[in-house]
Image (tube, rainbow, N blue to C red; front, side, top):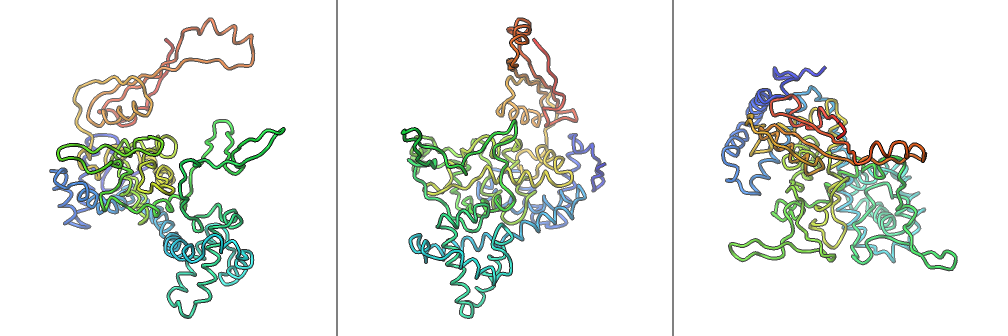
Amino acid sequence: MLNPRFGLSFEDLYSIAGLARIDAAFASHLGEAESALRARLDAARADPASLGRLGESELLIALAPHVEDFLAELFAIEPEVATLQAAQRELAPLFACKRQVVQRKALNRYKADVAGGFDGAALRDELEHKLGVALQGIPGELAYARQVGEWGRDEAAHADDIELALRYAAWAVQTPEGKSLHKAGVLFKAPRKLDFLRLIPVEHEQRHGVDMWRMPADHLRRREGFALTDPGTDLAGGLDQANYCIWCHEQQKDSCSSGMPEKKPVEGSTAPFKKSPFGVILAGCPLDEKISEFHKLRAEGWALGALAMICVDNPLVAATGHRICNDCMKACIYQKQDPVDIPQAETRVLKDVLALPWGFEIYSLLTRWNPLNLRRPLPLAPTGKRVLVVGTGPAGFTLAHHLLNDGHTVVGIDGVSLRWASASPTLRSATSAHYASRSTIASWRASAESPSMGSPFVGTRTFSS
């Protein structure tokens, strides 16, 4: 049974009064750790608009590590959070080496035509002898990154070793054999330049005298029952995308979040958004999620802080990620090469938090109480108003969530037509008359005063009309 610290109880996680006590405990915790930051938070809550976009981003990024520390202490999981932080930081050499050595040095020094002439197997054998480990998977790539970093401390003394490492990197990134060997890794890869007329890889084949195009075998994903065809990326893959991002909120150019304007607007008007070569409007994330900010926190090793940042604008992130939309990717600042895979990075953050003890309770709490949400850190008091939400798809349940946090009582309904797919004609015939023109309606009701506040799926029931 969870026994939260700071004199709080489990029930406090699910009541307005309890959440106010949690907020007060956080404010006290923050004040003891950094009193000046506590004062900045109080001032920002009083007048959020005074900060401006960049000022707000800087404040939230400064607060996020304190939110992570507070949550770890609140749920008494400091060792587990420290382990996750260490696992993230342990991989940091990969991404520094990828950008500074593999992409900037190896690929600039040896182009594809030259790298194709290298004896990759011989280079690999020599490198593995020097590294003392097999150059495969994340462990092998991490050993490479660390060793190259050590050699770089005295380049003159290790000129031959560095040359060997650069040659292998160029071969691994630019040849079919190298790509195949390191397909599951992150180090020996470079962004693909986009050809909008050839975005989907296809292969030519001839069947029965007919020319055909097909997807490469390694690009196909088979559906097995109701299992996901894409299980999502791993920790290294998520961090790879966070480090690939250039954190352009710092220049207020985060088009993934706010869209890519066509040009500077005429004074008093709003600039139209650019369109992709396919005519898709590059409006960015429809929720204005703070994407660049969460990537920066993730890259620095703050998974809980990154999730708190996501939940400011996208509290129901469990329903988005790599499962629904990619408007953010389309508007990424990288328009001529592979964009940052924001949905995969987002999903990985959530998975890593959910894997912690009390991970669901942490995520659930951040959808109701979130100190990074300067405008509504706590649910509002009950208003007595009742709202009916018809349709509980992503838009419907997101609207319901915000209405609940605004203090309203919400009822949601949705309809689904029944379809019989039995192979038995007899069964279909016997049941079709009974179920003709009938539908199943799922409904739920949640109140701002109830323990299920912020979780509209609690208490779901079905009935036939």
